[in-house]
Length: 463
Image (tube, rainbow, N blue to C red; front, side, top):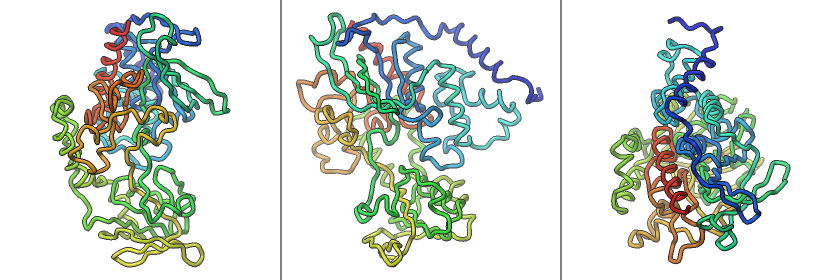
């Protein structure tokens, strides 16, 4: 059938999706008893912190299981949840278009169904990779049709466990008091039985800032997570530090933004060409990895990260089609100074390079002590360093939280801090414990299902 752009394909898709929900009896009827919190109001059964892809998938998975009393909050304005319209700079997603992402096995909830409703089947066949902001549009639609009801411009400032008997009789285990703040600065307390941290790649991490650059950050040096704009690059000499995908994305951003010259500096003597992480997404790995011995889990991810995850071919081509680009390998930065006119001087084994602006594409490292809202909690959370003391001091991976099978934080020592196992880590920091179930498009539905089933079980047992 030829697609007619005047035909309301999206309306027909949503009717078909409503039919799917009806036939499958989705969402299932709520079965969780109402419990009262310390303030006398009904307890929230699940507070989901983060309205990006993982938060949306988690919320839908919970409703599918009949857990309706949930709230989803996000610190960003509507439409800017996740990285897609903030610090991400790729032209298209890196995942192939056929991956179904958060669709939870429902054909009419896939990106493909949404795209064809807008553009037709022929356009889908012609599509290469999914444009980044189009993916954000799809997720916005996904949130609407699955009833996510995101509360935007709401920031989590603090979390504190409230232990029985402060919690009303019959409420089961301890609950969490979440201090929330609106964009206008108004504060309110929300009491929840379970809290899910669906806070993305940088939610429990901090930007990796090489020591020579630390004192210049914000003064000619920015990390990709700072989302520096094109206007900062125009008519300037720009150095991008790093050889990963984000580094190349920002090099392209600088070139397309009118930079005079862009130089990519990498400490490795070669650019990685094979993405070992591509072998972390098939069904055997997704289901089997969580069952592996701890030492093998660490071995696998150390192997992957030691070899580096290369930028996609299309991203390299996007950069290298420009004449004013230079790639310098084997060039770790040993010293940074400020020269005449405010230009930065970067000393490397390959020589000294000057720049008006430096972009650090150096990634993130896990730091559970970084989020202010975990100040009263982080010290009691078990880390991989605690689980594998013979591998310490080891690398940064050992700073990851050591999670239970349902993404729950575990105690560093007994007795466990109140409520700790009702605090769940559904973000990138879960990778070493459970694999790629909460940090990428391919397996987010599987991860959300695992998370929701764990929460359903714990609520049942508590009641």
